[in-house]
Image (cartoon, rainbow, N blue to C red; front, side, top):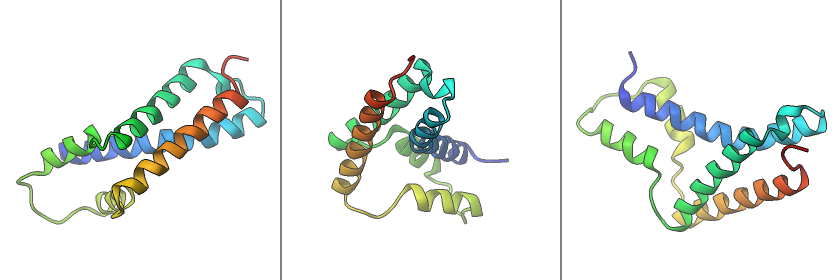
Length: 122
């Protein structure tokens, strides 16, 4: 049975997948003329999600999911599972905070440009 911290880690990975994969899916779906690629709820949720991530990074605030996972792991020493190890490794790269802030803002700009080039609901 996964621990609560592992569940938060999995949720975090799904949010990252939604943000990154969502942009790719929008471009592919729009090219294939799929109506879901212009779905207003999907697109609004997508732009808000990356907007929150970029804002937190620019303000140098920690991600609430990262904080929650860390809180849940306190006092739980022991080896990481295989999936947990690789998801953690991919999510928590050891780079300066400004690199992440720059990457998140650039990705947010890409999502906004996509919104303009492939507007929802049209």
